[in-house]
Image 1 (cartoon, rainbow, N blue to C red):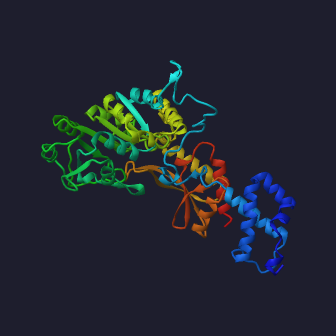
Image 2 (image 1 turned 60 degrees about the horizontal axis):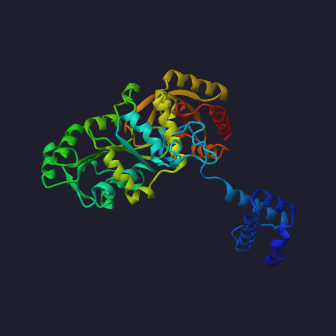
Image 3 (image 1 turned 45 degrees about the vertical axis):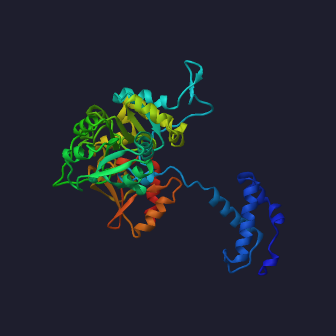
Length: 444
């Protein structure tokens, strides 16, 4: 049909058997929209063909459109990059079965007393036991945790922060912007590379509400640098009747040095040093879902909970469940069952064996030495030794795209016209799917 006036009507197409199948799978309203949009695309030239459009061809385009509309964009992927906390892939991978609530739950109900409870109590009981903090509160991310703490406790008050800590992390999150949004008055001290106790003392003499320390996150300064330690900052703040708030970022509860990495500041250390509040992420080195955790003095946490902003940034029940299950593994001394820590602890010899097994299964490739990174703004510059499967391909970018288009997308990296896959970040049970995807790219 070369004349657009000869295109079938919507009603005629709906009477076709294929359309009935679409309605059963996708629902009548969406099917109607897809038919109308397809016909309109033919009329406007968005769908170009050299031959005439038959009813079958139109319905095939309708089917393609329906599948495109309903195809999930948020889905599970296989991370073969070797970056453990991959920001673009959800940072910390969750264990199988996390978030398994079904039906009703005791989110805000006290089962002992039979009356209304508080959602923050579920995680608080784990956090206080693990860290020794008096109380805790959980919100949806660490940016919200810092914003809430400063808004509730430091609005219109002077807050001291070193110039070396005026950082920007992923997504354009900037410490100065958060301070401004909270209503606190930022007081910059020191220089980019050096700040001394005298700088804090001088600024505090004019009256302050808090000293804020911000973790540098995804960068590190070396060389001619210096700054006071946590205990010194806490002493200065308390001497002037102010708070010491530590934005710890990664939220490590285990000592990373035991795995051959640099020591990452731990939550317990900040509290022991005298921090009144410690804020950190749930989805970095803690190894759980995205969350912002505030720990510290009970009286301060109580004020934070009552602030109107607390409701706007509170954590939802699925994230809360995953967080509690993660914390429960720490409590039971099973932290290595948390994927992040399990990956960090993996032995290079084990990884070499896996890479060799992959090569033998594929009958192609080379096993080479490499390095895994922590990622996610944690331990910048630190790597762990690993072994990689390197697969030569004619078109690396085409091969990467082919891997991303698998039923379970595979994310790998490329170097010198070779696809590199790191066993460290492959979870249990993913090997078969990974190998099936790799076989596809070997045909390119």
